[in-house]
Length: 479
Image 1 (cartoon, rainbow, N blue to C red):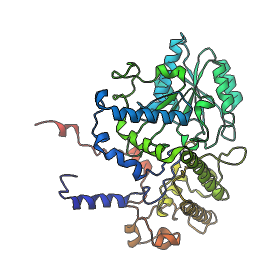
Image 2: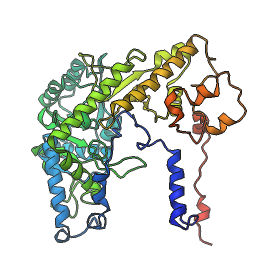
Image 3: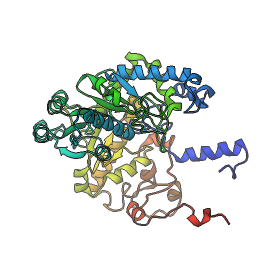
Image 4: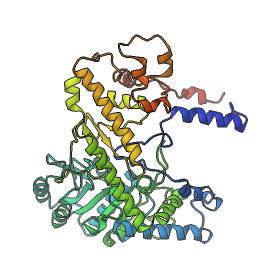
């Protein structure tokens, strides 16, 4: 790129061209469930551009990094207050690494008590997707526990398996609110069952955006949790990182948090640097300090409110798969599109692609349940944007009904052919529906249209016919 563009003007226009191809937060909400794609405010980002933070080496001597040490100490204290834990390690670089560090702390704790044989990890089927892999990496055996029809942990199944494995039980990994988008109503009882049978409670903090200021995992039974500073606490994420996945622990696990050669505890490092991705920690420090306790609580309330607003507006058109006993969801909701696939042949992929024509990034597809869309609007979105998204989903449901009743062809319709590019619209048109219906399904798009750079990609063909764009190994060989 830098060999092609030799002036700031050219580079600026190149970056603008890339931005015009993208569906990012500066254009639309990113409703990816389980991802918390909230606003990363410019005011939070500014300090990372300061040389005092950005140019400090990760291994700088302590006497040369007193200011950074103050920042990390204050951030750890703020995160302890938010989670109810007694100590925080900022070392893990990602949520998955935080999970790993948390389970290593649990294993080391058991070993310190002569309980090396405790290696069973209970994982409900509603837990976050990385949990089983993390438990396996930590040397534990996974036992899956069932969920009920509402998406909650089946407490009797959990109790039976905890008792069955009580002599080998090391931990449970449970996500709260669950990946099904509901608050586990029996969370305290679940924690008690595991503790009564000798295990530790790992509460996955992937969904902490629904908890800050409202409840704290360290106060309702958790022994350890990871947090996603790149989700809940506003560090940007996407494109592979960087991220920060610190762990919070109760006091009895504090001696087993990740150590480092440059720290008092030398063992258990999960990252090359003692404070992981330290250069981006000022973002979270800024976010928490500017929001304050009441602001953080308000953000959690709005995140839950926005998800329930979407759930209620769309429940007449798409079944909401899981709700609590009061009919409400947590900070995200799952729409079940499987009945639509049965009645019309329109798949979750078709709906996701059609949303691009409306100018929206698709929600999370087929996770945690195949054939569903998981929507997380976060607190960052206004009611106007929520309505714009809901109006698009309702319009798509009208198009699906037209397929169901035969008004639209079942194979050649706006959903099966989405997204529609500008090149396709000005070219030869052979579809039985109009160009206008293809690209302007709602009037608001006339003055604010996103044009996708490419049309529908054959996902299956691409998966089966990998084309590697990397140079061959021979091209690296010196002559």
